[in-house]
Image 1 (cartoon, rainbow, N blue to C red):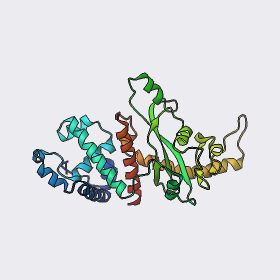
Image 2 (cartoon, rainbow, N blue to C red):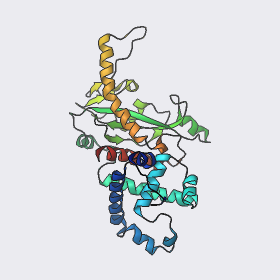
Image 3 (tube, helix red, strand yellow):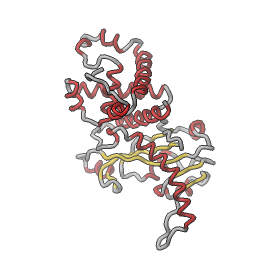
Image 4 (cartoon, rainbow, N blue to C red):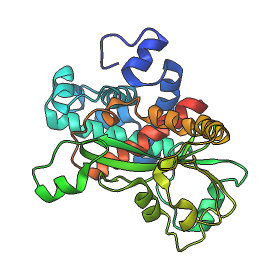
Length: 300
């Protein structure tokens, strides 16, 4: 391993890389297979052929995956990561990107990475069973404030009182994340994000059981063929009936599952603290990878 000692307990494994020892070993085996399929040689063979391979700090797929998961879990800067391994910042960044791509590809090959977009209703229907309730929600993360005034305005979220990006998630009651959108600027309303991803002029969600929160007011009008479950809003100047209160509580116990899914992604601090990565292609790759890691974790 790249560090002198590996975690000793399940708690330590979760604290350091977000998964336990057994899951880590399985993930490493996935990545070794993926690496060999793409390069037609092992990681170790690649090092041997590299003139600088003998002085490499990361000497195996196991080291690379541990290093990458450690950055995802802790959210540390690449400067700090480089200090820990005693190499330069640019190399720490390159190794992280290499590891991120390898983990993402491996999880995708094995069916854990959520779908990022649907090109047709038929694709949607292949992915989801109409008997399973679908829970929609958005996840939002603060980002470093940009020096560009226009971009500051686009990313400013009144809800979070800061500059953010957000994505939409669809999960099921088993907390599995089936879909996560690419990120949008923070000023985008949750329902506007949904309509951007799923054109209301098409017949999306017909006969699907959809559960959303009050941020999706207007869903029934835009997607009338869906079987919608949304909390009752307290009338202005009035009160909810006892029956409506009980119904809202019942819906909340189901919608909380998507909150658990979002929390599962944000076990990786790189997606819960203020994000310092300005490349949105990389951010979207991290988002999909962490969602895939969550799906892998709850099913392995």
